Length: 92
Image 1 (tube, rainbow, N blue to C red):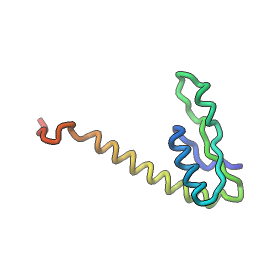
Image 2: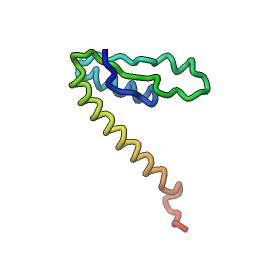
Image 3: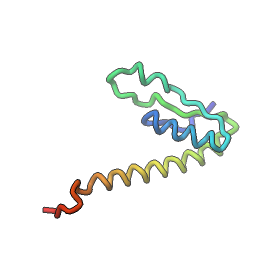
Image 4: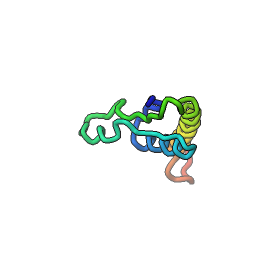
């Protein structure tokens, strides 16, 4: 098994895993259950999505697509956050 993606959180890990499995690539999330044992400390670099060696090249291409989609979604959320709560409010 080879690590194809290091996730910031379980949501991202499952998005990548689901995308890989949709293309018939078996995937495993390593460290998924370690985050519960961390407590109030930040869980950094514990979660990784792994695939068989034979699927590595195909998996890397899929991961790049998912990362691009996640990046676009995060940017859209950031852009929405910069807008005023009241759409009729004029900037000062």
